[in-house]
Image 1: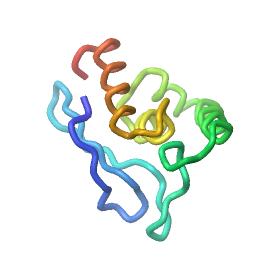
Image 2: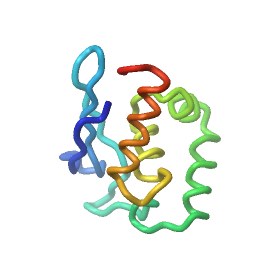
Image 3: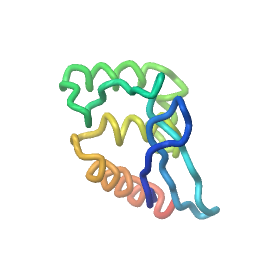
Image 4: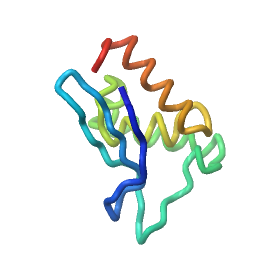
Length: 108
């Protein structure tokens, strides 16, 4: 379960998620950032076509497909569901991903 989202301290990542798992807290930095700037994602106002293209591009990558499809806590999964999720609200997207994890795995 994601318990906290903050700005990432890493130069090339946008956000940091703290995830409580059965094994303890896991920290994952995700979201592309270059020279202190990040691209426009769905939560930033990208349109539905860009969202659809993002999902198609990332699901076409076999590694990312497995991570996203199996709900494996990873930068790929977090970017897909939080930055390119169903809504433009990060908090709502986090709640949606947490609900999917609970349904699929109980506590991760």
